[in-house]
Length: 268
Image (cartoon, rainbow, N blue to C red; front, side, top):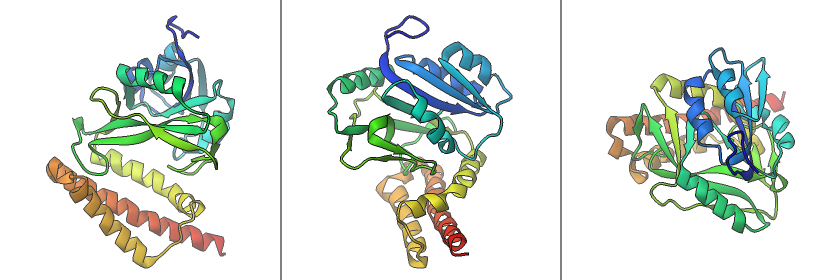
């Protein structure tokens, strides 16, 4: 298999959504040229997203109305992807050549009961690599999925679930093999992400079996801050680490609030 540039590719499909992220999109798509199929969904952009998509993507789709989060469209587009293995990725991510090589090696050796592959990810905030917090250091993020081994839903952050009998593996970090994530460029961007994602957290948490508890809401939020700032060494990022840990705890607190609201809506 070969891509538009005639380069040999792996039997992997990519699904990516972009809303006014043309300034990030090209570098992302360039890093994905090892994949045989790239499907790009334009979420009502008014920048140069279309021009870049037509240059690199194998399939281009325009959506009139932007959803709160792209996860809401996975259920619609994932079943139509060309290959069994697929990648879900954002325009602000870049796959290193070393990671692409590791992905190819793992796909050649992976057993039939594996349906999720996690990869090393390094997040950047306001242009700087994060050393600590729950967002920083080397974290392992889900990147590749096997369609026959997962259920695809619309829940935020948890819409892709492994089917019973399947398991996951991770590609271990080796200095250069990582997904570079230009996560947030400002505090306002972080807050905007939180506002959008929180609107779907009530249903997502409920469907995962979580039930509201006043005690758990406060306890989990405090533990989240401690884990981010102390255990995950957020203090290495100074005040940025402190405030990111605070916002991580705040998100957990508000997530329970949304869960409570969702539970009340079911009892009406």
